[in-house]
Image (spheres, rainbow, N blue to C red):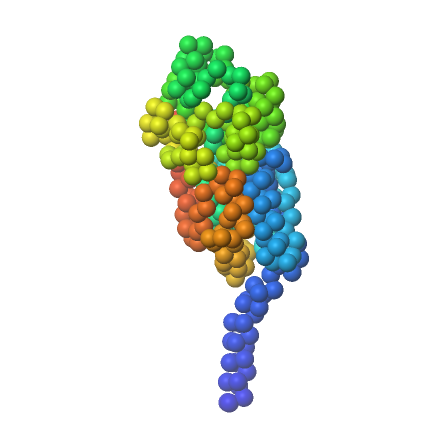
Length: 326
């Protein structure tokens, strides 16, 4: 009997220790972060900053893999179908897990909630409406006034149909009644390049990354940001709400998502490690803040709850603006 109890106790101990050891050994090979957009935009920039810090912290390579297309849906779907071992993550964001589920709903080949785990959130960032310095409008009020007097004459570029930047302006159009032409690009960097060269009057994109740098250098003029409050990175840029669009608040966000069946011990390991990297004085925090991101770490449960709220919010907006996906 004693021998049997020892065997049972040993088995129970092994069952308890094995998952912990498994998580402690993670990562034992390179980790991929999938990005659903072309290089140079806010999502890609955030992924590369995170990959650099995670590589430094883990001593194991973290690789960014760009799979652009379908407003980020290609990378999200590839992640959903990957082996649930914690080695394929996606830089999930307001587009992939907010707007896209709202637009396409049951047409998606995966469930944006049930098929995913949400191990780490980095923080939030507004979208920004930018114009070339030669454009005479100095702020959003002047931009809207000009658009009302000259319907269909102004154009704006974005990273693609249905992405968060595009939806921000569609929401603004529905509230203000203005008629401006959307020019979709295959990525944020291409839209930004055309407005920087003066080939396009305006562009809208995530504040993080290249747009912030272009605004800081004076190569572009920011007319307004979409969040409900001003950015701590450039507090002199007024919000859409401050410029007459009451209640307007579109705040993008970035985080790491993976498959729902990834072992909980690995989810906890990623969350613990990334949240530590986002702590005060840490390199990842500073790198992200320098790109205009307001840091807001969360538990996996808190992150998942936020994603559910985002999908509900954008489902309502999509219906109001009639931008359901084909």
